[in-house]
Image 1 (cartoon, rainbow over the protein chains, first blue to last red):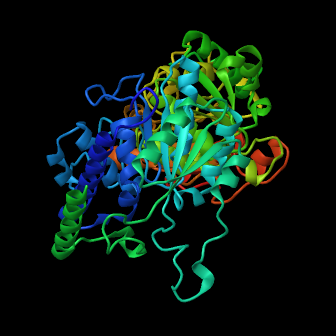
Image 2: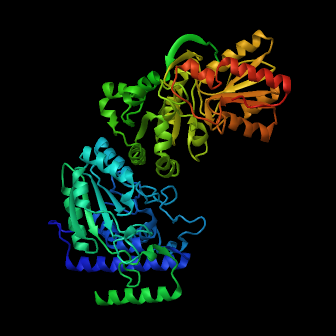
Image 3: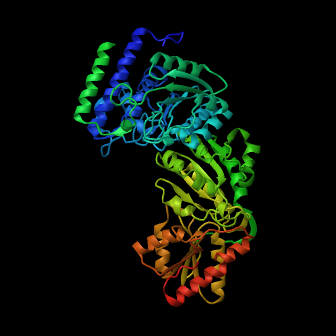
Length: 292
Length: 324
């Protein structure tokens, strides 16, 4: 990022390529593992790319640096997306992605900070990621440190009540060193769905207005296209610079983004990837790379 | 043998908790207290008055509070949670499991108001299953001190222990068992009375009633050995086995249900190492109610007379029957 917070066109192209590679790692790793979550990692691909390659103050060589920015993936089932970006960023060899979900692997089904350096918090039980982020932001304030804490939550994730306990307390403490990015892809494993046509209205979601909800808890909010790297980077820069209140970035995303047959289909939340699925996905990703 | 000095000097563990938190902050400034809106009950309010910079109000939101503590611990701080045990055990159990116990983070859980004696609040506020629940959680250390002296020492030890600790505390004043020379260590059990006929094993403030039961038995000519087990996990297997082998009869008693608590832990250890006839004296498979302390102890079978009666039955019949 340049001094005025803008990213050069060449750098943006590079980051787009990184996000495509991230998606390739996700689909290949899940294919190799036999099954796994796909839709969520795909919707978060640009968010993770922007954070790890542009936004966060981190160094893969010193993953325990007390002054580093912190990251928590509250929607922990999207772990393979996080592992992919950590490998791409140099926290471990990309080869290790093949061990995802295998016995003795550091790449557990859900992120386990006890075994993998570079993970700042263990997650997997939904709704729990924002609260440790508050703890990290409070710790920075108490210890006089200037690092920023970033938390990615999902829209399904934030159906858990704990998210709202946390939103309340973060607003109360005015934690301007804390940013939450809502990966608002509108689909979950089954449950509520913004997609119509599943038989009756019982699965249509409650009224959603995240901006109003979070603002009511004392957060500043910003809504962006969660697949537009420039918008993500700009919004994160503004969030880091903001003072007096935590920021919620509402990132509108598409579940399964980037692989046509996964987009908007809740069944790709988690399922096996066949050899044919993999071939088609590689073909589509290659075409996207070609078109850059 | 420990310095057994049961005195009538009554001390409430919660008062010691509040004062010792201040001492911990002074000894190690990484220590912070997170309150779930009950500090004036748990006495963590002493910190809010004396070390306000180390006191963080979290409101009535225990799930978030547990997660905040995990985040603070991951950054090198030592957060102490303060609330009623019923909430810290049940309301945020999944948070304790996922972001504290699994990553083995350095969070200390000051669980006040355990057992039946919670100031006439009734079953919703009486935590009678916490030992069973907490000792089943991997990575968690579980401590239940007997009196004010041991509470302070357990807190000092917990603050220096790397990893999550659950500290089981009570509300109301109890007699003091230990003098200042007591040497509390995590993982150790303490013989607080020597005897030969039967061993009474107890934890937390129930050890006071175990000692009084031993007095009642002595009047009948029965020599009771009393082993106080303040460290539920890790637990002192050697001391439990030695006491079981020495007396050949064991009564385990606690202000907790008879399922999975100290009695359960002792039964597991004895069955595997030195099968010994035993009886459990605790709350039955039931919840409590709101009533004066003495009446609760009587109705739910926790008095010294109940413990002594159970020991006598065990000596006469040779077989263990849970007294509930």
